[in-house]
Image (spheres, helix red, strand yellow):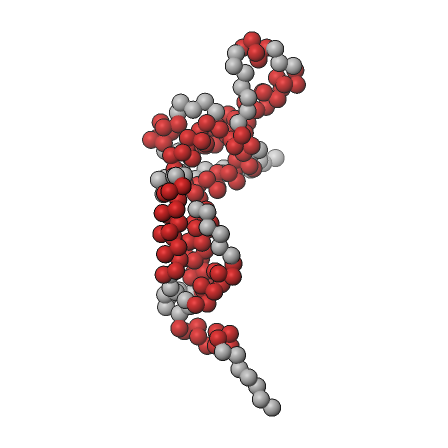
Length: 187
């Protein structure tokens, strides 16, 4: 009997990839049934006496929560470099770690607004290169759109489609000419 072990690579957090790191890590934490503990935390008894006074079901729930919390901390630690780890090393729970990372990397509303303005300008100025395929160009647009959405912009799909059609390379004009000026057939 053979057993297959699959090792999941935890993405490393850098100063530039917090948003995508966060999305990936949330997905992984969710698959490990730890995401709720990270987001909401749990109530840790303040003393040994308080813990001893819990009913058996509460003790079991506490044991499960501690195990999930330790699992979540281990996963998060794997995605951090040494410098970042030192920043959050004193945090006691995965929830505290998550909050500290958000505070450090997420940025304030003012910074998000500035970043969003920059992304809007980048979106509007984006043009298809003659060497781009439509798929490559679509991917470049969607990278910017997803960053804008993560920073609070509400962009509808029709706006994306209009942007693509407006900024395609001229070599695609023949494909779009029926859309730009519909032919009228006479009998």
